Length: 341
Image (cartoon, rainbow, N blue to C red):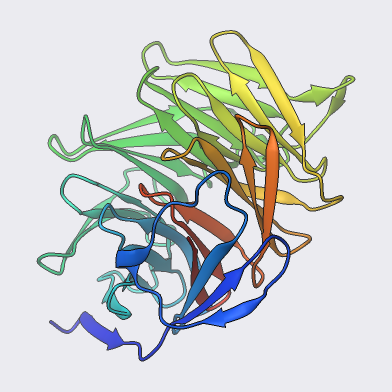
């Protein structure tokens, strides 16, 4: 097919990264030997793969360890297979569509993505190299973030140019949109997540100091102000935890936080490295730990919630990260995808 091609990458780079110190270079490290990072382990193996692009905007790890990624300016969806060092890319049929974010259906292995410029929802079926696109009814809505709920087959997405959160159900070809605010400048959603237990969307807004929830059962919005001594503090990133738990970062305040919605309880931890700039955050379901990017120190950090202990590893300018089902931590740094394990 014209829109499909594969690139075989000749090498990957591996190194051992002890706590706050890069100590020695290692040889080739395969996905088959990758395991979760134990909570009491402070030394990790870092493996990196060069990607022929500098515009990766999102990554998602599949159940078998493959890594899918978006290339915004190149108009492509890519896949890295760490076990074989193979990179495969698919060109999106709509020219200059701007693939910005993606989500994985762990049951089928299909990839869903938003086309920020194309105003579409896309689906890639890697097994057949097939891409299908659906146009969002609201013109120029600016879809930016996407979540997939495998239990219902629902696709949730944000619309930066309107005031909406959208849902698309493939089986019925039905779009639904919820308007969050009449003031567009106050409604740009920077991150969101779907919580199946409460059938709700949790989200944060640009420069916002609230954690917000849209309850899809009754179309109501709840807000939790995140403040210290009455002073507003900006939230940068959010992640699901276990049941009834949402985690977040406050970059300017150098803090990690958690919200328990059922009790309206907020807990915070101060990152030990001063002015580290904790930004994007991910919860590791295999160990119950939190991983996050430190923008100001070029580190990836881990918070062990059970012991309230922090660990940090130097990384080459990490932009964002992803934790797979096995507890391996993947990150993007300019034209590189890396793995800590």
